[in-house]
Length: 401
Image (cartoon, rainbow, N blue to C red; front, side, top):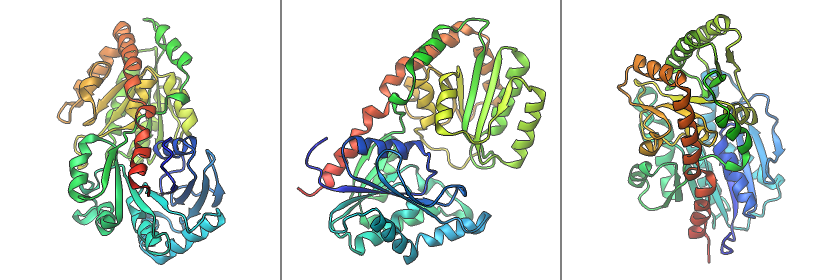
């Protein structure tokens, strides 16, 4: 680590506690010897306990704000992020963690709704601190009710306080620069941390694949068919594949499953009792374990989604490192390279074309094995270790000499 950094880091986030990007970020900073505080705002998991916690040696504090259900919960959270109460509770949490209010800090924000809090912290005591905003999406394209983007509202409200921007794709640079003309901008893509995967399991899976081997197909992630995930297509692929091949197991897991999709998935579970599993929520460690054993994995967006933008999905790059062939319908980063080991489809491709391509791949074990090997080789270019240092480079630019 560059010794010039003399600022501690306060991470502000409202993502699920197991969010892979934030966990990698925290772990990397701790491994680099930085003093890290994490204030985690939980408005999702009702079972999570408030108070002090730590995953990698950081000084963490969870503040639960889920006091309502449904739409009321969302409305309360959005208004809470603009009120002085959030500042009061944050400062109280930092005091419990024994932070030094005199020191300069990097205030690293992972959610646009928490940008007002970061600005309040700077205005109310942390005068020498710098705000870094980790921009996970193109929120100006994420139009919600009444033709507005709520995250973009928070961004525009606070943009003049921001000193550094982190984006997940080089393709997000120009949109970010238009909105934030002054801050330093660096790209830290959503690549997986290679050290958490078992190379021996992955290599054995690839080398042992034969024409009569069991083939595991997997998708674990968001399952909201009413938003952007194409659960209908995923179910169609599963039904056709399991009907066509006796040696395939299909695993689906995740959250936010809509009612109609649940009915269809329950029907598949009954129809293919021994070959189809719906797991619901899957912890991160279990997701890694299952993906390492999978031969093909899916990342499918609905072609009619309003949010069709260039993406750097962690899921796709995790498939690579696991030697799992990605089946992709999304405007994905590095598509030219990924074509060597993936099936990539565009927004206009017909569902039946995608289903047939998957069936053909499953029926050709030699080709499947070649693509799995190519995925594993390509993964070396897309690991967290290759890009994580850019956080430190950005902090150096903002750190007082």
